Every structure is written in C-alpha cells, then in structure tokens.
Image 1 (spheres, helix red, strand yellow):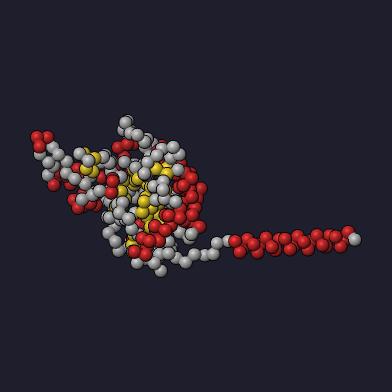
Image 2 (cartoon, one colour):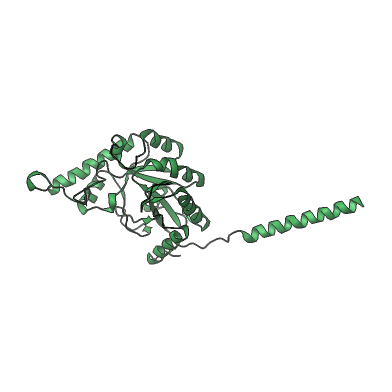
Length: 290
C-alpha cells in the first residue's frame, strides 16, 4: 500500500513539474522582430536623483525601469567604442542603443552608475572639466576626480568625454560656445578670436580627461545643444571626431558624425513605454525599419 502511495505521489510531482515548465515556456516573452537595423538610438540623460525636480531629472526607479524595459523589448546596449566602430564601418546588433549623460553630475556616480553595472549597460558621460577643480556656487555638485578614475578603472565600458572645459554657460542668454562674445567698449570678438577660444577650451578639456584614462578622448556634447559652423570646425581641429547634439533622431553610419542626434530619455514624464514608442516613431521616420 505504501508503495502504491509513493508511486501516486511521484506521478503527481512529475505532473506538477511538467505543468510548471510548460507554463514557464508559455509565459516567456516571444522574441521580438528588429525595430531597426544598422543604426543606433542614442539616449540622452542629465540627472538621476530621488528628490530634485526638473525637466532633466528622473528618479532611479524610472531610470532602471526604462533600461530594463528596453532590454525586454529586444534592444541591445552598446559602448562608445562599439559606436565608434559602427560609424567607421563596423556592425551593431539590431535595435542598438547608446546611453549618454551630460554635465557629469556627482549623482551619476551614486545613482546611475550602480544601475548601469547591475544591468550591464555601457554609457558615456560628457563632463565639464573646469568643475573638477572649481565647483563653488554650483547647484548640483559634479563628480570628483577620484570618482571618475574609480569608474574608469572598474568598468571598461563606461566612458567620460568632453562637455567643454569652461563653456557650459550663457552670456546675455546665449550659449558661449555657439556665439561670439561681447568685448569691452562695445566691441565683439573677431571670428579668429572666437575660433581660438573654442579650440583652446576643447584642447584643455581633452588634456584633463586624458590624464585620467588611457582611452581615446575624441567625443563631445554641445552644451544646450548649441553650436555654430566655426565652433564645430574648431572642435574638430582640437581632435574631436564625434559630437552629439540634442536634435532628436536615430544615428546612421552616413550621417554627419559632428552633429549626432539624440533622444531625450531623461524627462520624468517619459515612461518606459513612451520611450519605446518614441524610438519606434523616429526609426520609422528615419527609414531604418527592417
């Protein structure tokens, strides 16, 4: 009798195990067809913070949710180095995404960086290098040198690149990178003076970041997304080969690498679903759909 009971119990366990495995397979998400191929969606963020409120600040929960959702939908996150290789003729996986941050805020180190590590997502942060030494009066503190070095030494697929040395500001409401500055006695900068100012500032930014890493420092994000033809030329002369705007779009290999479009993902109103839908719309308008 006990043997029969043991057999019945064994059969029940087999049936329950089989049912569990079947339900697991059925509930698993089906593989998604590529939304776009041979192109890259570059996401733009600024600040990840639990209590600060602004149009460029999101909570850690939303940041994690966005990245996790995109992974579930079949997006593939790539590093800046993989992005460079793609621009120069290499391949990227379908639905390729590059995560970028502007401004180099310290909360990137404390709030965003752990999530990137947790989810194995590469990223690049564009840093204003003067803030490494002079941060008095800033509303949001920047990352410190030791924090930057720790990240670069810990995670090979995290990059720090240029956001100018000392040009992330405005004079008379205009971005100083994109316009000539007024001089004393009602005069204005000459074109040559303006180009030299941008060139020298970019060289300093590159030099400061090179002192922290052995990786190339050849990428740049325009403050406020503003630039001019002369500024773009001077930045290129200083050694920058990839410059990022805030213009929305999907990046293709044949687009201008000094005016790379990005998708704003760092607004607190952008849910994971909204971000996915926005990328899909841009991909369709970009004729990048498979």
